[in-house]
Amino acid sequence: QRPNSPAARDVAYHLHPYTNARKHEAEGPLIIESGDGVTVTDDSGKRYIEGLAGLWCTSLGFGNERLIRAAEQQMRRLAYYHSFAHKVPPPVIELSEKLIAMAPGNMGKVFYANSGSEANDTAIKLVWYYNNALGRPGKKKIISRQRAYHGVTIASASLTGLPYNHADFDLPIEGIRHTSCPHYWRGAQDGESEEDFATRMAADLEQLILDEGPETVAAFIGEPVMGAGGVITPPRTYWRKVQEVLKKYDVLLIADEVICGFGRTGDMFGCETYGIEPDMVTVAKALSSAYLPISAVMMRDEVYQAIADNTKKIGTLGHGFTYSGHPVSAAVALETLKIYDEMDIAARASELAPRLQNGLRRYADHPLVGEVRGIGMIAAVEPVANKATRAPFDPAGKVGAQLDQRCRAHGVILRNLGDTLAVCPPLVIEEEQVDTIVEVIGKALDETWEWVRQEG
Ligand code: PLP
Image (cartoon, rainbow, N blue to C red; front, side):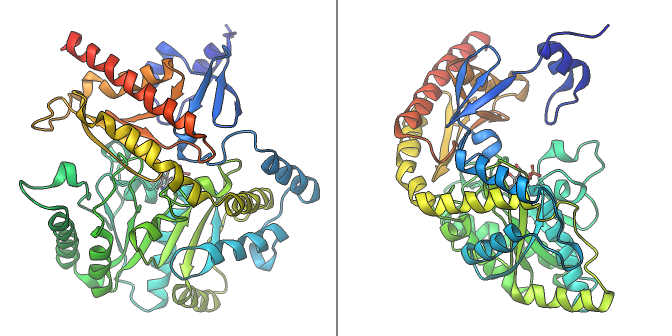
């Protein structure tokens, strides 16, 4: 028999991404029907502040008329074209020029894909291609980090350093290694300063490269600030120390700016915040404020030159998606970047940041809270079972899910990464809405603390 409510139909026909399917069958979906500014409305008419900008992506919020118009106009002019075999639609030309002009470091060329995962997959393939072009076919391993998030395709999920992205998927693939996660609060030894911790993280990386053999290691990939792994802000000097190691062994640095890019950290790119000089940069999400799927891989000219020589030898670059440089996505991305310029998005993020960061840091003394961390307009609150020992809760206790549900009940959608509550609102948010998010998290912490005491 055909189920009839929308929720029942969703349960009947849809396998959800990142969802416990059995729990979903029992509880059904939250149906989000519309969005306006930084808020979304569900099918019962309840409005929420979208405190995670969807999935860390809708930086300009919902219903932006300029983005809607940019999409509509481009659809009418040329709804689709591709960039294979020397062809190109005009918005892609403009977007490439703009992206290269604003990119961190010294990028020379850009390649387009549709998602962060595809961009990181492409980056790996280009690194392999580059080393083959240079006549070093043995230099292929890619080093990522524990708790990194780089996507879910076979290669990018392999880079991701979270257990459930590997379990039962037969991942990671060959040639991927994971080094230590630079989370000082969790990872520091007794009495170790942040500076010493950063030195140790870089030494771990160097040891891994030496153990593998530097002639086998092609690239290191990292998010300037780790997002989905728990919003991990590294020590200030971490990236400088990591880069010294990479330079020493001729290992390329790929900066995954999929979350950090376009103002999130208070600078245009996380690379600027941490003094990172990347060889390649991947972007997605806020590139189009998530209005349409588009991602990009940028590379230094030297990397491009070797790749270009190889395409001449082989006859073509044997890589590209039907929608690499989709003209409607490109037109929307271009308009997004113009809006970021006009509103000075990084300055706006730095202006709002103290409100969010200081507001949340007030909860550092809360009995449930282990660490409050963040930079710019991205932050996290991590609960602990024991404040003194920093022991986490038993995952089965589902403290994070409690926090998430209580925030939602109070009208703010956030996301729990395990027990850690992440915050990453649209950058068009107003001061008072930031305050509301902070207040609601406070209420949710109090209520969850009560729940823990009653349950425990
Ligand atoms: N890289 C980072 C840092 C991300 O946060 C994500 C997604 O959350 C990805 C890559 C993968 O992007 P997508 O989900 O668009 O494939």
